[in-house]
Image 1 (cartoon, rainbow, N blue to C red):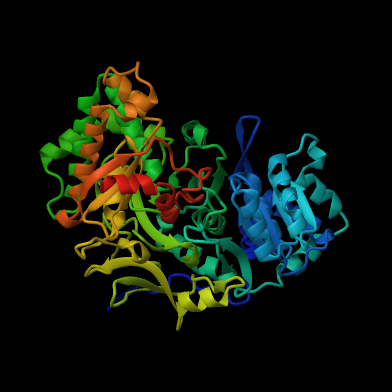
Image 2 (image 1 turned 90 degrees about the horizontal axis):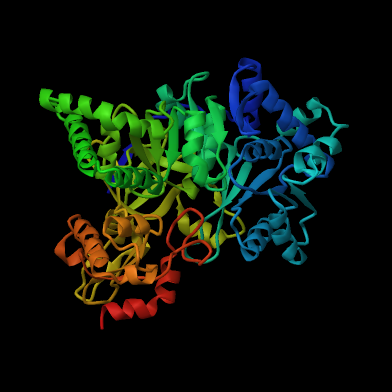
Length: 601
């Protein structure tokens, strides 16, 4: 059993709550732009004073509607300015926010609102409102549905709330805001539901203070008030997106929101953030898109050489001698030819990113650091209020998920499971004492993840305890390592390793529909249909190379011997992927049982 811990850098206020942050910002930084919102195609700054006024206005409307301290209020919307505004308004009314993914089905909406006992929900669109109405007969406690977007602006949620709460004063809102303390619930964030019904994680104001306070303090140079900015494109319904929201307000730094990932490149260029937060798939697509574009323009060999130099340069930074003169000169040349253009795609000002949700992979980690855009990997769960470990900007170890959050402890149990302790942890699963008892023992949260700690206290995640495959020969296989390596190939959308009780390890692959046309054009196969392409021998050979690359990361007994290409995609709509992009392994195994069987017959 090993442990790693760091002293806390931030003291949680015992009698405060998250609404203190917006009042403090208005008092100390009244004219500083703490948020920006997109209007008529232009970014408009929102000062700390203006944001506080908008939050109070919405909170008055909630109070006028009869929302009481401790009531649960659902919030279902894409990532947008109003999400953050209404989140703080719910807290200012003394209530508890219950995020609902905007892609959720009526069945999922019904479960979350019913289980949480929500008395109201703020939805973005008419379609969302209809989904709520379709299950409202099973939600006796749901008294209100407010819609953010409406054809008549005066019927939108913000206008309706402002009008309804006109009789309330700022002092009345502030009095209500002060009722919650650090240990009061701030939000119920429902888990992804990879195995069964989603569970509502109760995260207190203390959880967010401990999490965001220590993140901001440890990464202080990345959170400079009046200088730094971050563009949030992750779902705010996910706890990682919520970390970005609260940490930005806490610092404070300017926070912008992007609702549509298809416009992300354009928005990065116009907003020009100094910091980016994302999941590995985003950074993989940046790399793969740049490589594909270089190949299409006849500069593929230059890009590959530049990528190799970037990775070599990054690795040399970790050596005592540092990069050689020859390597520094090569790096300087490629910085002008390639790296500067790649940084411009990310807005031109961003020097750092924080990545979570899945392993990024050492190759991409070194590539991005080598081009002057350092991706700091972290690790966390809904139950740990997002990051429970992360790489500091000044002591990065690529290939690990970093050191423990200051003020917390990471322990590796005798069976390899990662255990966590600290103020940032959730307090319980809502309405589920049995699951709470199983997950929390003597203040330690059992993550279900497997990991190791090195001599410097850096954590590496090696797999998922419940996802360990045991082959017929008795070999234990952790799928995550090889799956993530195979999935980094531009043509691979998803990879699921199988082999429990089987004679060898196999894999199910789906092909990335965005890169398939590019690949077919490069290989003179434009005339083939997608079905024909998926069975094409050259494509299979390319996928085999992805498998071979993945196999290099594991032992022979853990390597993939056969793979099968599925003529479909895993998606939220198909029920195979959660909103946070995790595979529902049990659902995939059930739905594609015949394909799995075909690997072994």
